[in-house]
Image (cartoon, rainbow, N blue to C red; front, side, top):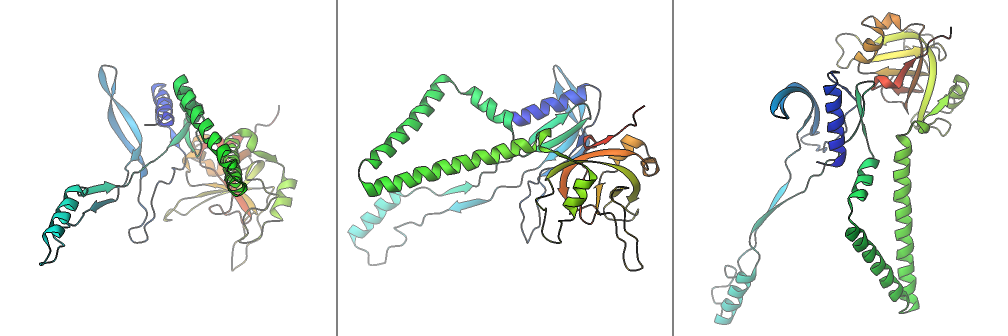
Length: 343
């Protein structure tokens, strides 16, 4: 179990020990391996059952919310044919002796299986009783670095110095080799810089500063540049914060295969419907978890949300909600804040 998993377990236990009960989980990471014949494999699933956990000197019943079931690794059997068995009937004594020697030195039959690695980086918010999952785990790297002993640090530095010295030696052997090694060194530095930029981008995405606050004038200008099948325009930030007044709340019918809640804003009015189609607002928010709004506004949230001013943060997307030029999918209650009127 990794440090991040240990940290996540600890925070989850803190939530439970505080008497909060079950935490709300964000969308689960996709650990499935797509097989066109067998379909996706469910590695990580939601669970709703109690399990017995040893706490101190007694067993207590705790709610389990995640079920981890890794797939079976793919294994291969390696068989090495006998050299003696391949000899012809008229083989000479020398050939038989040579084949027997090969059989004596051949590796034994064995089975090798693939290694499976799964990384789950979780972050808990005790104030809202919610847990989200990140792609990057900065505390893990810091802890791994802090665990290195002085001897391990010195050995790592010696290896780095030895590689650099070898590069310098190769450079000194001739202009062609120097050119080759110089290019390899340049490529290695560029790759290291690119990896660091990717890590920094993931760090920024997890920080509140990565969210850009927009007003509706900026939003409408950005939406004007949205084109079908062209993705997110540069004018639209990847992560944003928008404030709007709720004009309508739409629920999927009871018999729907998936139940969605779509919330529309007065600032992005819906277009008039025709006998052929219904046109919705250009930008809205939605969720597949109605409990988020039930917890905030009560079981009659559909009517109580009308006229409320909401401030919503999240990633820009066009895949799930009914906003025909863009939307924010709400997966956690902490993404939505009710703006109270100033007294």
